[in-house]
Length: 83
Image (cartoon, rainbow, N blue to C red; front, side, top):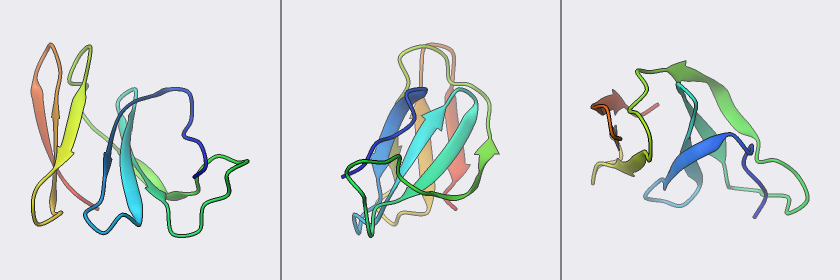
């Protein structure tokens, strides 16, 4: 399937399975899963979006319509429009 950067701490798949969102420190990133190469890092879509860090042990999920990313950690809940 390919790899994510080692700094990714939380992930959520898109509803269609063609992309995934990953939290990398304080940046929300989106990766393309449509043509993965098992031997390389997944290609990023865009450059990511800076967000408030949710804190330690972050969890992530997408809304049922795929339009919103929810992150929760030990410090706060972050709600971010999907991109």
